Length: 432
Image (cartoon, rainbow, N blue to C red; front, side, top):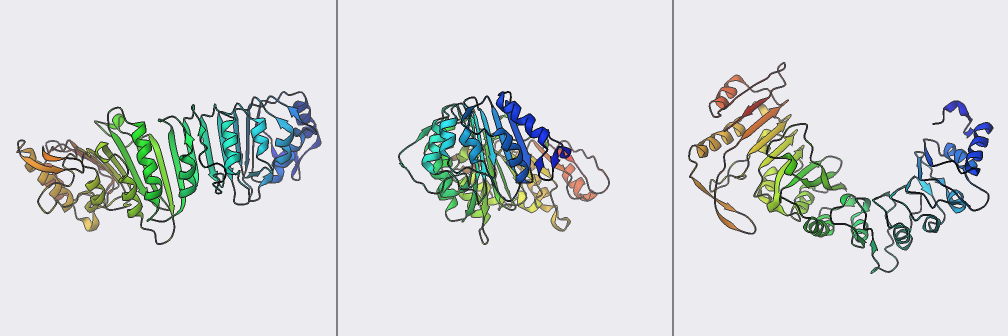
């Protein structure tokens, strides 16, 4: 770690430069991890580490994070340094005049992270594929900023095999990202993170949706229990993960670990609902049993209709009326298999708790008639199934519940508990 006192203006003092140059000559440096908000500082450190002729070194980890708006040129450093033992390479806002240097200098990478700014020329598709192919032991690949090639050049039929890959994160336009994904051969259970820019509602699901469907089909789930997380704000977020560890009970502290994360940065006038529902349509909907939402990204009614086997709902910062939808016109429940509900900071619009009490009344009615049959229909099959009773309902830090509403709820459930802090925070658990 370098303190500011070792700098003269924007460069290192001469004694430290000599020390770095000596260690580089004696090849005693194993890790180079540099981060600076001023690119000139990084350059002043790299200069004594750059030889005047081609030299091999024993560096195993190289991280250069330039947080300056202007990228730094690291071409000479990579042109003269050969790093056959390099396993971890991370470059942020750096330029390389010829990406071919990385092809000839690296062969043992396990982690490759490239985050290039708009003024940094990205590698072409053939160059990127050559870098990946020369490092078959890669376990983690992250390409963000402008790192994903846009030219689509080279042999389009060429594919690269990354047999040991465990984590893949890509960011770019949906066509570029999916085009690259289609040409990478990786293990079925790789963790996948995608960030898509400048997306329109009409083309996003059609572009990334088919790949998502194929990926989930190849990956599979041991118990056929998938979880879904949906949120929207500056962009749309959709996560798919294994829900087995979240059932049969849920708590606020639980977090689903996704194996697919998709973030869509939309433009003006884009309707998030179309993108969300379009992406969900490409998932194995019958296997999704856990749904978590943040905010009100789209009508839950539309999501309910796509998830016939939903058993657990975990929502935060959402109106009460959006959670408890009215029954269908024929009287059927919109979420007939729902058993557990956890709501955080739910809002009762205008103090209206009717959506909750009506929902509990209907569930209590069917609980008293366990042999009652209701019609259930899914995309693949139809038939009659039991309307299952609700096991638990928790409200955490939600709107204040009036006493008369609490009495109505207590009359509908077997167990009712409250723990009030002031007049705002309230929690209760109900078993119907």
